[in-house]
Image (cartoon, rainbow, N blue to C red; front, side, top):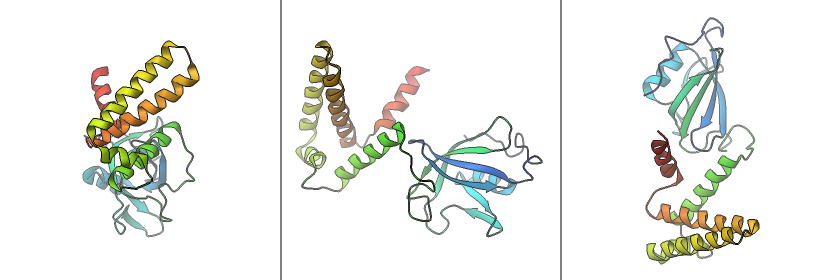
Length: 203
């Protein structure tokens, strides 16, 4: 459930009833866009679990994606320490920017965003077969072959570790993670499912 911050915590007087909002991708951590909310926009966002801004150009409530259907589905939201700006984590549908880009900001690739983009690309190779794609050929070969490759790469990673060859360990670990992702995708799972399980274990 979303934290209720509409009636309790926002310092509306301080922000003159218009709070700045930063929208961030829930998985990759990419900053997607920036906008503003008045109390009504924030209340609607919490109620619908879809981001709604107050558009200063339109002078009305504006649900992001109301025309394109590229909605921003709210995962969580939090205020900063001064209660005068809001951060919302979302799962976006499609591209966010009106220029048909994933983000309204020039994309700066972080470690997490690179991994997210890599995994998204690997998923695409499963969904849309390509003759020149090794990933596509792995999926075509079936689960037994994919599992075999994971086993082989795990052994090679272990050998690299025992031989104390750091460069080889990095390379073999990269191969192992790649094949593990392909294995997960063959079951319609992704790395987020592993992270969720690790979070449960951490508790």
